[in-house]
Image: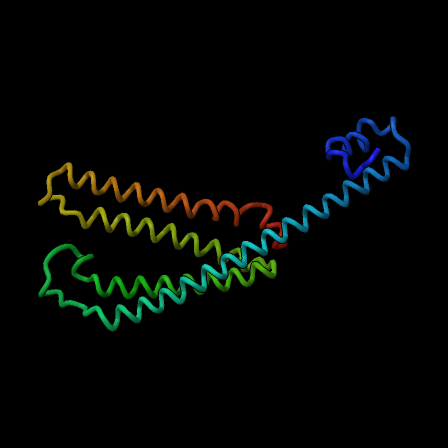
Length: 199
């Protein structure tokens, strides 16, 4: 029997319930083939984790550079208005400040993601923790942005249905981005990644 062509279920049967039906050499060969396949699966799993770290490092570096450039652009091109000369919701009165602070926060999160990705490539537990921390920061940012959006709507001036539709749209967008963040969060908190990092 060609053990390399056999399925894992067939090999498990040889070393398990069908052990007495095969010679000791066949059982030993089946056990060795199972060990070889397990080692190959582990190597492939580690490669996937390192590849995920590379992706995080690239994305983090991009967001860091983009955030810094947007902060510089906002500082040079946007004039922060005076409170007494503005009327309207808080978000619009302080849009310039919020823009620059948001860009700096994006740059900081990108830097942490870059650091975490580089550490994850070396299978360090700290790298996984940093990436998960950035994802939690993203969840918090989505929550704060959604609450700010709903609170800034002109509930008194606009018809009730208009404000409800706009707030519902904000909740849908928040749910969409939360789902996109949940996918990598689920991966980086999985037992596979934890095990690869020695946790």
